[in-house]
Length: 368
Image (tube, rainbow, N blue to C red; front, side, top):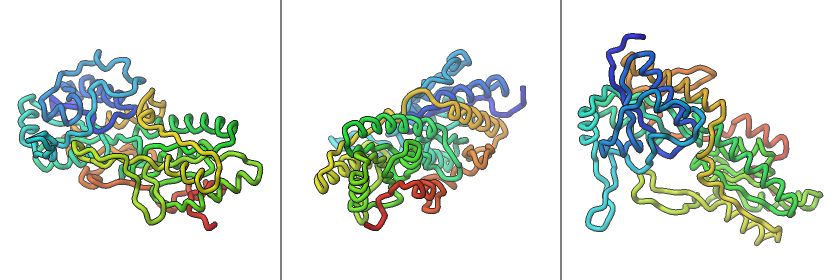
C-alpha cells in the first residue's frame, strides 16, 4: 500500500448520465482503498449532494459488479452549479451562490479532496470551487466528446455505437418505404457524435453545427439519389445543426439549469422542408436520451478505469486542480482552468470530414 497524506476523498458524478460512470466510481473506490488506504465518500446527485450535504461512505462491495452497468449508482444532476444554484423565491426562479455552504459541508465530512466526474459545465463548476480553496481532480465525461485537451472522453464510444445501431435500423426501413429519414442525435454545439455515427452507418447526408447547411443542397442530394435508382436517403443530424445564416433551433429554455438552452427540432425541420419542397415522403426520429443509456462498450470501460486510477494517483500525490486526459494513446493531466467553460468542436480540416466527402457524403454545403 502506497503512502499518501490524503486519507479521505469524495467522488461525484456531475451533469447528465453517461455510459461508464459506474466504471469510474468502481475504480476510484477500489484504487483509493486498496492502493492508498483511503476512505472514499460517495456524493449523491452531483453538486446537488454537496449543496444539500447528502453523502455516504463507499465500500468495495458496493461497487462490485457495476463495471458493466449503465448510469451512476450515485445519481446525477445537471441543475446544481454551486455558484448559480436556482431556487424558487416569491414565485420566480433566482440564482444564489451557495459556495460557502458547499465548503462547510466538505469540511464537516472531513473531505480532503474531491474526484469530480463531468463535462464542460461540471468542470466550470469545479474551477469555481478550486478558486475557493477546494482540492479537486477532474475526470472528463461526455457523450458529446466536446472537452478540449483530451482526444476522447468516456461515454462517447458507447453513444456512437448506440446512434449507429439506430441509424442502421432506420436505414432498412428507409429503403423499404422509399423515404427520406432524418435521425437527430445529441451533441449540442459539437458535431462529433453525428459525424462519427453518420460515417459508421453510411448516412447519405450528415449535418453538424460546425458546417451550416443550405436546404437546397440537402434537397438536391435527396433528388439526385431518387433520380438515379436510390429511392431513399438517410440523414444524420446533430441537434445543433442549423441552416446558413440562421440560429440553432431551441426546443425549450430551462431556467433552473446552469445551461438553460435545450436544443432540438432540426430533424423535424429538415424532414418537413424536404417533403414540402420536393414531395419526397420524409420522416424524422429523435434518439434523445437513449444515447446516454445502456451498457458501456469495452473501450469506454477500459478508458473509464484508467482515467479514474490516474485521478486517484494525482489526489494521493497532492496534485490538485488537474483534469485527467487521454492524448495520443497516453493518460496525463492538464490544469482544469485550461478547459473550464470551453468546448472542442469538429475542425474543418478534420480527416474524417475529408474521408466522408470522398465517399459521396453530403454535409449540406455543396453548390447546387
